[in-house]
Image (cartoon, rainbow, N blue to C red; front, top):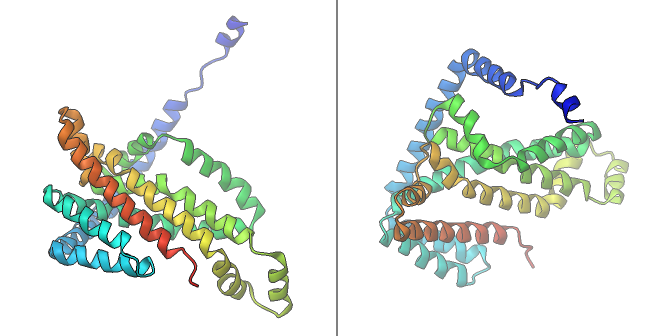
Length: 283
């Protein structure tokens, strides 16, 4: 039996992928170069703008947002103040701002791409059947693998980090948008149809508002997945707290690694609670 299996010629899948990547990087090099330069300039400008804000003012702004987002409760606001002061005290403020930039850009891009795809899937059974396996593939593929095409297209730095983060964080927004719209009661859709609503009117005035809670849950997951890619993206030169974690790992500096890691946890808790608070119903 083994001889029969060995007689089957090996498929040159790796060679096919190499050929595809060579074709993409050579024929679209000017486009990738433009995206790399524009993205780098945009993200550096965003980080500079964040660093221009005095840390005390930034911390107060976050605390005020947390206070009102949690319906005037002090828990998250106090935690934000203490946590951000700790990060500043440890000399990791610039790294935190670089991390904020990476998370903001990758999350916004993933949401802008993910919601329209989710809407498209909810409207087309064919699209749903085609895109679902692709999302399964994207979610089961280890995050490290996304670094390979990112480096091939954009070199090293923050832009390939955002590229890899977008691919890794995109599926939840697509899935939850699709799910939220499909969960809209058929009776309400039939009522909208009976009143002569157009497709766009039904989408924006009925389906998206009713699916908002589910879509926001997907956005929350996308933001957290973007943050989880910070350490992995640091392997290809993306700045931020992940670089400090990686550096501590390479030099076996347990203390520095713990401080950078706990700073990431503080930041993750703040953005997680903020996005969850925005999704709570008003009574």
